[in-house]
Length: 242
Image 1 (cartoon, rainbow, N blue to C red):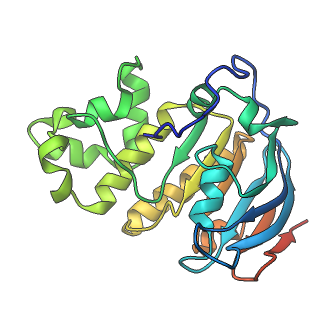
Image 2 (spheres, rainbow, N blue to C red; image 1 turned 135 degrees about the horizontal axis):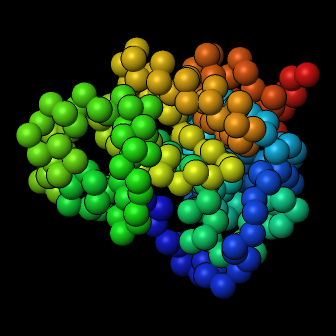
Image 3 (tube, helix red, strand yellow; image 1 turned 90 degrees about the horizontal axis):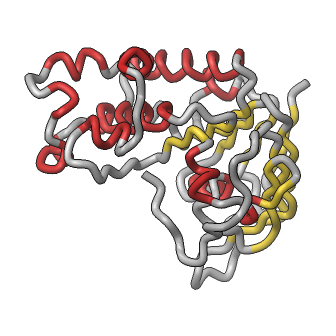
C-alpha cells in the first residue's frame, strides 16, 4: 500500500487517460540535516512506452527518486511532469491507482493475502489466477490449507521476503496502469522469481507501458532506453540508448 503524505492533493485531475510520458526537470534531493545533496540537477525525458533504468549503490538515492516519480515524496527542488501535467496537480489517490507500483520494502495492512491483494476492489477470478501465476505465487497459495486466506496479520514476520515481494507485486498488478514503477524488483527472489520479473518486464515493453526500474540486474538494464547512474555525484550520469 502507498501511505498518504501530509498536504497531498486530493482534489486534482483524475479520470483522464494516462499516456505515460514523463519529464523531470532539475531534480534535487537533500536529506534533512545533511549539508550535501544526495544528487542535483537531474533532468530527463522519458517517452510513452520507454524503459528507464536507475542504477546506484545503496544510499545513492534510488528509492528517493522512485518515491518522487510515484508521487510519494516531493523533491527538494525541481518538477515532475506526467503527460505535461505536474504530478502534484493530479489527485494522487487516483494517480496511484493508475500506476503499477512495487516498493523495495513492501508493507501489508490486510489480515490475509486476499485482502492485501484486492482490498474492497473486485476482480475476476481468472484475472487473479493469471496474476498469481505471473508472479510465481500459485504454488505457495496451493501449498497451504488456507490458500488466499493465509493469515498475514500474525505470520507476516515469518514469511520469506521473496514471498512478500511476490504478494506485493501481485497487488501492484491488480492496477493495470500505463506507468510501471519498480524498486529493486528482483531483490530477494530466487532464480525462478527473477525469471518471472524479466518475463513481466518483457510483457510490459510489448504492451508499450512506460517503465521505471531501480535495479542492479543487468538483464533488466540492458533493455533500457534511458539509464541514470546515481553513483556519479553530484549530477547523475544520464545515458540514452538509441
